[in-house]
Length: 221
Image: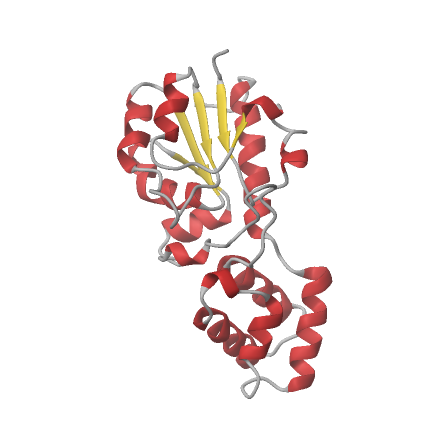
């Protein structure tokens, strides 16, 4: 059966939640090189790239996105690999959605490392915290008076120093010992248990809603 919609989704959003917006039959695993081409050949007219592989396999190529666009397929990107590719190809027709896409587009974020994480290959449960989520959580904690600006900066520096598979709030706080007061680290760690920002998930949900609107004919040009 041809896939009119193809959504490449992994750890950015729970599939059960995504399935309440887009029928589960249109949800595919994180994209690797060639997967968008295969989706186009399978009849997709809307391709939404959210998650994709980074290191273990060849990443989604620019040429396959451009080929899909040239053939008249709507290609949307958000949250993770999709945000990266949309920021690189939005002037050529790819549509970016969400804050992370805009941060890449505007040059605030520049590294793939910002959205990288490790996850359980069976159910896509995240096992580390992407740096962009940590940035957003630190900003929120600063705005809410949990962290002073200097402490937030020290925690961000600690997060950046940790290799992406090892980024957890606990490990980051351990790395920041000596730079941030112990009481502040304890308060921040407790704050993350209930108030951590999952910007990748928020952007993925926005992309799913955008995909649904386009598929329904209400998403504009």
